[in-house]
Length: 475
Image (cartoon, rainbow, N blue to C red):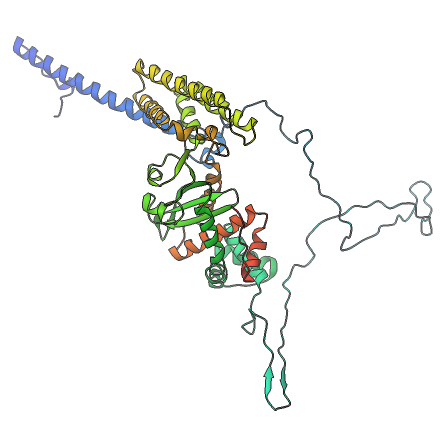
C-alpha cells in the first residue's frame, strides 16, 4: 500500500480528521521502521562481504590484493625471518669441469710499471659465470635407411627408428617443451609458439601444438592415469576438492582427488554428487575422506574428516564481528594440533583425547550461552549459531585429526592441487572444448604425480613420448 509523505498529510480541522491523520502517521512510522530494519540488514550483509578475506572466509589469497594480512593460525614471534640456525644453506656452487676456460694475465705491475710477460705464476683465482650458450638452436638428426640388394636379387630397405614417420618432423624434446609450457606453466598455445620461435627459431603452427597435447601425450599417459585412479581408489586417506572453470563459455567443475604422492583431476558439468562420482574414485571410497563442508560429499560412502582451516577462517570472521567465544574455540583446535605434532604420527593418549574433547564441548556450550543474550547483529548471530551447530553435530569429523593417527588437520593438500585451475583460467582464459579441457587435466594429473615423486615435468613428458610413462608404485 502506498503511504503518503508527511508533507502531503491533510491539515485537520476537526477531531475525526485529526484522528485520521494520526492513523496515517502511525502507518507511515511503521513503514519507515520496516524499511530501516531491512536496510540495516542489507548494510550488515554488505559490510560482512567487504570484510571477508582469505583469513576469515573461503576466498582465495589472490583476492586479498595489497590488503593481505598474516594468517590467523600463524603464531608471531616463534622464529625470525630468513635462514634458521642449523638449517642447510644454499648457494650457487662452482662446477669441477667447466665447458670453457678463459685465462686472464696481468700485463704490467701496478707499482713499478714493469712488464709481466715472463713473470712467475704463483696462483690462480677462479670465478665462474653460469649462463646460457651464446646460441640456442635446434639440432637436426638425419636418418638414412639404406637399400641393399640381396644375393637372391631382392632389394631390402632398412627400417627407420620408431617414431620417425615423416620426411621432416619435430622430435620428442621440443614436443615435451611445448606441452610443458602449456600444461605446467599455463601458457596459451599462441604464446607457446612465440616462445619457441623467439628462443629456438622454430615456427610451429598452433594446431600442431594443440595436436601434440591431444594425441602425442594425452593418449600415451592413459596407462599412468588409469593406475593413478586405481591406487587413489584404495588409499587410506584421500583429499578431495572442486572448483569452477569455464569450458566453451559455460561453467563446468573440475574435481580433484589426491594424496601427497598422486593427483587425479576430472571435468564435469555438475558440482554435486553426480560430478563427484563421475571420476570413479570417490563414489565407492572406503578410507578417510578429507574434505570441506560441501554437503554432497556426505553422500559418499567413506569415513569423513573435515578441514579445520575452513573452521578457523569462519571463527576468525566471527571474532572480528565481536564474538569472543570463537577465540577459545580456535585455541582448542590449534592446541590439539600442537599436541598431534609433538607425538610425530603416534596416537595421543586417552587422557589427552578426553581433555581435548571436553574443552571442545565446553567452548561450544559457551558459544550457545553467549548467543542467548545477544540481540544485535542478526546476521552474525545466525552464522555463529549455524557454525556451532555444525561443529557440535560433526564433532567426530572435526576432531578426527587428533583421535586417529596420520589424519591431517586441514585439506590444504587438495586446495594446493586444485589451485592450478584458477591459475590456468587467469593466464589462458577458458578452455574452448571439453576434449581440450579433459586432455589438459589428464596431462596435469600425470605431471603433478610425477613432480610429487621426484620426477620433473619435462622428464615425465619425455618418458611419456617415448612410450614409457612414469607410473607411481605407491600413493
